[in-house]
Image (cartoon, rainbow, N blue to C red; front, side, top):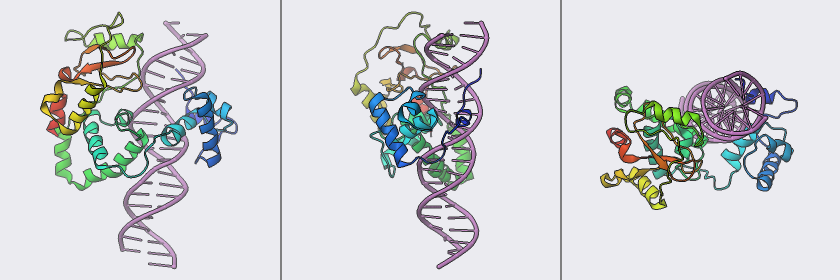
Length: 244
DNA sequence: AAAAGATTCAACCGCCTGTAT
DNA sequence: TATACAGGCGGTTGAATCTTT
């Protein structure tokens, strides 16, 4: 399977690279205001930009999109990043999805410049200990439609335990907003009683994560195309968080 | 004041996966 | 079923900026 890479795209005649100008930003913003996000291949043409689709997408997501928060990370944001990183590893987009206004790139940059430095300065012994204690759940989050064959394979491959094969559309299970917020409150406060609540997975893109080594069970959907896993059946996820 | 080193962060790259044909 | 295309992701790079000597 051959995919068109940004590099190959950039080889196209007249495709610009490097820093964006104010004029380009304006063109991109106007275009997305008019046509909406998505259809990134059409965006450069519609906007009159000599940029590849990926460059446009990245510029929008990381810089031009409204409600993007700039400046210093606040203490609670840093705390959340640390916790989520322990939980998810370098799944920056998943982490960013839970920190309003912050982009995956921002968080990744912050982590690479601040947190890795802290790990180094904390001394070899501590990092060694951490490496042993921290058991990062590193699933492969992917956006899967309910029709995806892969989804069936993934779920059935771990069957024999508590998993179900979703041959038929699962019954939607209501997922009240307050449950989600309490889950996040729980993540910050680590209140014992809250941990049996539902564990939401990326509430924006209908994305869920799961891997073959992931001991959760698919219970249903929040709405069509959105799956989640019950926190209580998440293995010892919370124990992992606490252990660090 | 200037050079060297360190840090930050926007942007690029290559890869993976889903979807359409 | 095979192929091409599109969307998305994490890792990496390099220029700009800041700090130290």
